[in-house]
Length: 562
Image 1 (cartoon, one colour):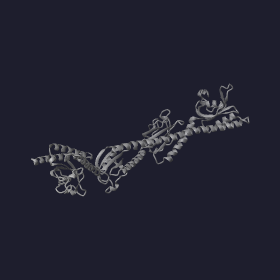
Image 2 (cartoon, rainbow, N blue to C red):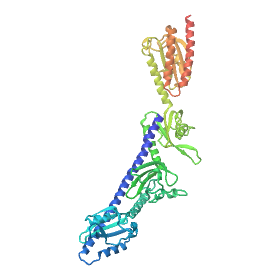
Image 3 (cartoon, helix red, strand yellow):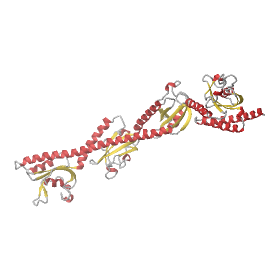
Image 4 (tube, rainbow, N blue to C red):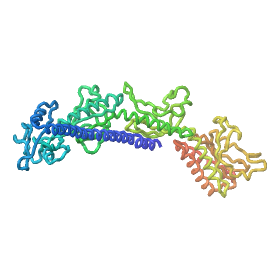
């Protein structure tokens, strides 16, 4: 039972909680990632379009007055740009209408491939679209060619195409810096006081050297001599992977604590978001939940059964011990401080948190004798002890002994009868004197044959049962409870604290009946004790003793007959 419970808690309590944490990280990363990526795209589009719309409106307005050197004005605007890598480009169709010419000076002409700008067939597509009378924005290749984000429109009054473009790498860098600042705020304010950390890293493009931390590290003071630099295999995940990835048990930049981390790519930004949390914090939360679950389970039992859990700890001297993580069910039964009894609860829980499994009879934290099974949740170093008071086990065993005796006595065609008795609660071992000091817990099979004075009336002899509950064994030929002359074999079960008596009418004691009696005796005592933990050896000893006594009894009967 302990092993099954430990396995269930491992699957449901530990693994499922890890999956839940990981899925929560993935969900948060996906939402944040999609939001960041979409905000970036919308920001690019809205900024570019608003700029080109404003400038095109201004140029169209000035064109109505004539004589305004619009091309020179735009050249001057480009020259005085306070934001690098941005440019306005005016163009118009060539005379043959199959090509176009740039009207403004090309700010980045020095970068043009082979010194010729716009020669690539895929370059300057925004310019071509503008001259075809369309308006829009797109990620494209300019005249250099280099990646740009461009907004474009046509100026019908002038017959010009207008393009406002920005180097895409520059835009990425600017937005990544904004995102990194937001991530830093999250780490400083929202997740403060926890090991949760949100990280922004650049994706792998050309080996480890291309990977970089963009946001600030939350725990640089925990790095020791140095913080581990990022790499293509950072935390065992794949930076830039299109599918969200979760990894468990990897060491982060601090070179120490293991973490659970989830990755989500920001494809438009060439970066990845990483959500991570220390395994120690995750496991501490899971341990608390598992302990609460154990407390709840124990509360459902109305008997002495208890599910008891502890977590392995090591003190400053390196000595292993445990701390209790579930509420103790019977603290009101402790004689003084719980656990004060020497060795109480220690052996089984220490074995459990050390990830051993088995069963033992020992004392629990109350100093009460219990039978326990123990196992563990290895990932958490949590010991699981499932225990029940020995007294309850014995009470159940005594009840089962009576039930078994009754089942064997019913429906018989002979006079054979198995009887089970125990001392009354106020009678100590070895002090029973007569029938008033014991209770026969099995039914009297032949009570209908009792004399008019009732069972155990005048002429009956309970001495064999009295001797049995006092711990003795032997045989006797005497009257039973009816009363009728019988051969009685009796013995005592130390573990069950029961007296057992097997009797048969003296007139029926013959060889065939002896064989039947022998088999029944063996079965009765064997089955009665089989369901009781740790009692097999005692049962075997008692059986051997009763068999020896029976042999003596058989010989005595034969001698009397002769």
